[in-house]
Length: 74
Image (tube, rainbow, N blue to C red; front, top):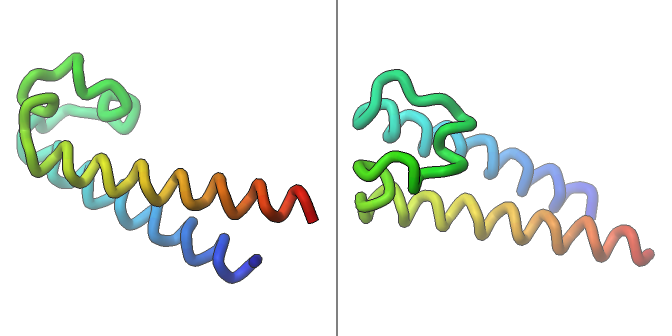
């Protein structure tokens, strides 16, 4: 399970980077905290590519939480 957790952590970091790079193209001064609330930025909130990539990140984070829950039960 440790390898799975490491893989997911790495994928999450890559996805956050991808999301930030794209968001910076639309809003040059955006921060990592800002992308946690895209509804504050209509250009992000209404952009289908951003929302898709945000969903990918959310899925990876959910998978990591599930792996950690399984580990905690062991």
